[in-house]
Amino acid sequence: MKIEYDPKHDIMNIVFIDEKIVESNEVDGIIIDYTDDKRIASIEILDVARRMKIDPMESMNIVIMKDIVEEIAG
Image 1 (cartoon, rainbow, N blue to C red):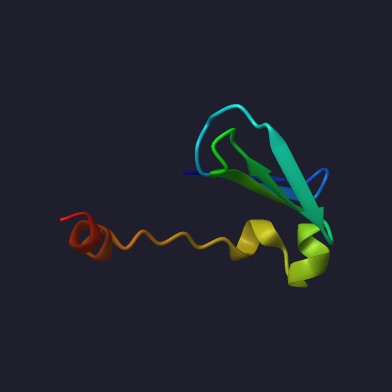
Image 2: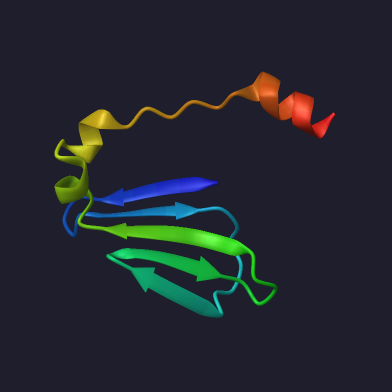
């Protein structure tokens, strides 16, 4: 997974899988991109700072809960 934030355009993109996008649906400035087999490839959020009311660059806190992932996978 990759999370990108473009402060110039105030867009955040969360990429789950790097595959060809065949369909996109937008609802209120949130775009969900799908692969040909209907998996979610990415989610793009427009006007992030307006939606968060705080600076996205200062508020990012990414936590990976490895123990839970290992429990689910194992």
